[in-house]
Amino acid sequence: MGEDYVGYEAVGVKKLRSGGIVFEMNSQEAAEILQSTDVKDLFAENFGGGVEVKPRSYPVVVDHVPTSFRITLKTQELEYQVIEEHNNLPGGSVVDARWIKPPSRRSSTQTTASLALHLNSAQAANQVIRNGLLIANKRVMARKMLFEPRRCFKCHNTGGSHLAVACPQDQDICGKCSGKHRTSDCVVSESSKMKCPACSKQGHAAGDVTCLVFQQQRRLYLSSNPLNYYRFYLLAEDEASWERILTENHLFLKPRNLDKAP
Ligand SMILES: [Zn+2]
Ligand SMILES: [Zn+2]
Ligand SMILES: [Zn+2]
Image 1 (spheres, rainbow, N blue to C red):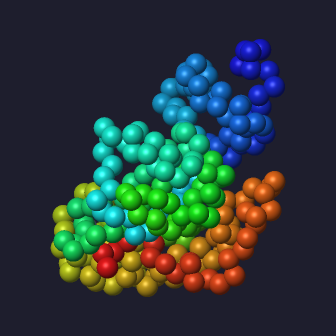
Image 2: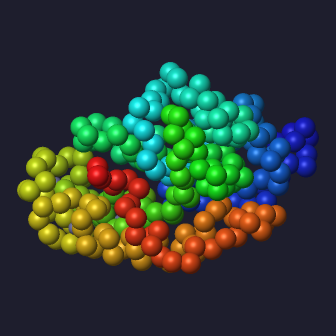
Image 3: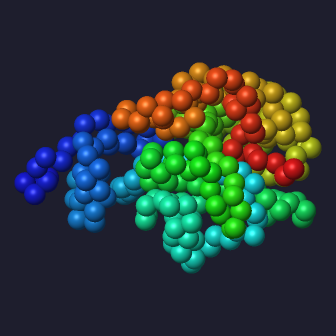
């Protein structure tokens, strides 16, 4: 990079199993510069294109949000602003909001649902976890999103040891019927005809909330991640963010992607 950027440094680099790379910058200003258009372009050039620079976000789960709350691509910026204003959050704090379960899978009587809200700083996320949120004229509670295991879509392991790019298996196993093909190529659609590759039982697909092997792997993963025992996102300078959650009950809530209608 040119001399205009002297003093802005990456102090840490982490390669994710997903193939992404996380750069930790030495200041907020440096992080903002990394996301500015000309620096992004410079990055894309040096990495041979196909590079997307995304700021890190801090997700929280907001429970019991009225389903009357609407987010559309067209109005989302405005919705985010309203949330920021009603909750005394700095402008630009809300970077994403989406229903955890697709609205199409709701029951007809469901009036509230869980929302994944992504904030642009640990401070903003912690403020929401501490104070709750006023959304769609309702005051609701929020919790830090757990660090969930991700499933390898090639062999369907959910132990969190690897993702598909690093899968040790040679062949794709189908998540729906356990056959030797990609899940997307499967012709089985009825759940009664499915065969889970994780537990070999009939009646559900891989990663299903009712799968005992999945439940076991998930609990093991959740309970072995020390960050899942802190109520807030940890901030070195803010002692109040070091509050520990003493019981394990919060680890046994429903997986975030498999929220079922009440
Ligand atoms: Zn695998
Ligand atoms: Zn199949
Ligand atoms: Zn299973």
